[in-house]
Length: 401
Image 1 (cartoon, helix red, strand yellow):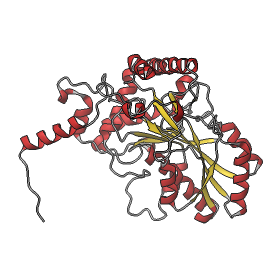
Image 2: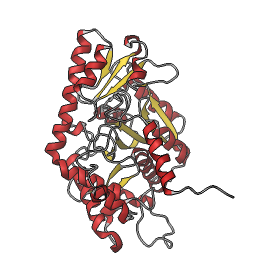
Image 3: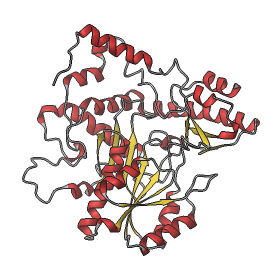
Image 4: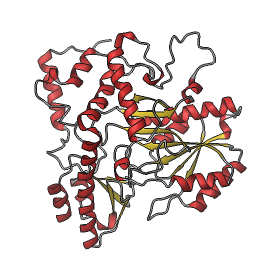
């Protein structure tokens, strides 16, 4: 085998050229993606080696395992304490959990968090009820993130998909009830229910009380996982008394994505679950395990965990609330203008996404602004996402088209 080695100058040139070819936040108009720049308060360009995140990367801390189950790794005890503190803030302050009653860790993103939750519940059903995988299904709305399709496939379980109302994007109660009955008639007895705290296309927040009411009336056996990958760092500030958190005893696990609204580096999710459930990942033969490494990923970058702690502490709850308020004010301004122009759109009042109907789109405007459709082959809706890099002039420019 052979490949050519390059001198350091050539490597740097190639990388700089590749980066230059990318779109850039602040230069290109990118209001269509649920992503943005790194937070400049934390990831600044002044003396890059002094940036704490870069220092953490160079230190190369390995944060394998779950810090809330006890820190036994003396090699990286210092930085693992920061991860533990970040998890406690997310679980107890943001998601209304009781002190010390949640486990969690910084994962590689929302997809891993969703898979981690479903993996736990599948094992729970197998061990507690002696269920076969053919008796277990994931239940979610048709607007749920595609990672749930991956999860069901990887775990070998079935999927029950509930149709939504085309205007509200909420699950239809009758469709929910019928699908549960049909699933049970086909031999499915155990459900892993995913409730959305902000879908990535419409920003829809599922009505969790409707979900649980129907499930209970149908006497279904279920556990609920909240997918807050998009809304987890927004919705708790716009609806502080919401029901998609640990104050609701129907909720067992939650997923947050720090690389969206929190502006942490890509590959930074937050997995949270009530105490005791990680035990369902303990192998029956533990002779090869020195510690409880109850995480889907093995070795994890301590730098990403530290970045979450840094951002949470740099802003505090008040700073993050102000950040959310700014983008929500901008979104409300757009909605007012769209109403004045009689433009058809869908939105959740407490989330920072507006989906505009295809018939209202001027030719090529969606491509000019890098908007994302609900269906790439036959689009009906195009979404505008209000993130930190989206400003008033960008919104006005978009409306003027």
